[in-house]
Amino acid sequence: MANNTKNKFFSIISHDLRNPLATINQLAQLISMQSKTASEERIEKYFELLNASSKNALELLDDLLIWASTQTN
Image (cartoon, rainbow, N blue to C red; front, side, top):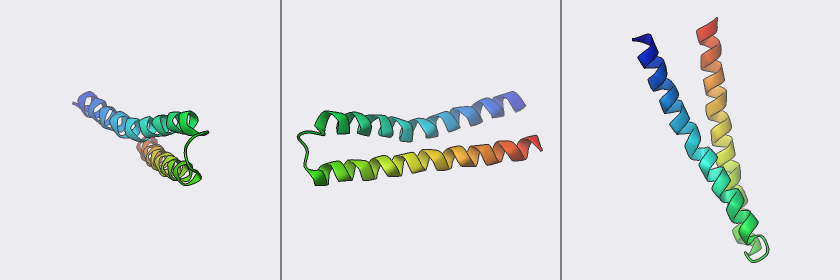
């Protein structure tokens, strides 16, 4: 039973991490492709989204590390 719970937990975490990381990847590709043709405002918006997605991923990782630390102590 504990293994099933752990597997489900890791599945949820993987899914939750995948979304912001995929967004970061897509935005980086978009910035790379449009860096010479897009307006400064558009590029600035991409960077704002990139920043928000990376913060989201870092917060999720921090929460996971805190949780893991509480489980091992």
